[in-house]
Length: 259
Image (cartoon, one colour):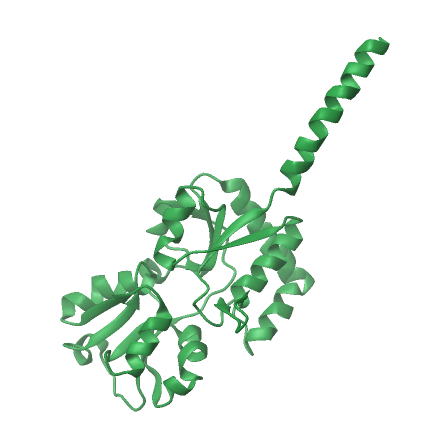
């Protein structure tokens, strides 16, 4: 009996480090750090922003360590599928199209899509008034899909870019007539900058659920419902304990969570 007990204790001692290592394994999260105020780089080269801070708050709530991995937006889902990371937290809207290839947590924020153009531009009917004009969109985004399906057939030239920041540069330089993007990102990443002077949000709000979904969620690999559920529970927890509002108030003077 003593021998059996000794062997059992030895087995436990050998397994314990493995269990601890598994418990301490970081959660790898993909992010595009070129989308202010949601994710961007400080002058020192560090990632910051609403997405980043919310992600860290969620990891703290789930008692895991976040390991952030940068990736261009159009490569986030492919990289998730090949296990470069475990989740994507990068202002990715939950849409029926994306749900065919990944699963999502419940939303952690929701903001509308708008067009930005020269201030004072009259835009009564975008499909008529934008005909023949160039509209920049971020490749593989919900704005790309909408513009491809709705704008392009109406004779509007859709120009695709790797990042929204590149679009803002070309819009300011006069190489584009407009951009379709998230209203908060346009405001913070362009209109409030020197380059955005003389530009404004114009026309209607775009919110068709087929294209724009129900808000931004955290993407996980298809079938990883356990991780998606953990994120959903953590989102509810930080909204209940005040941490969500604390992060939100650093970046916005309104409720970014939405309806």
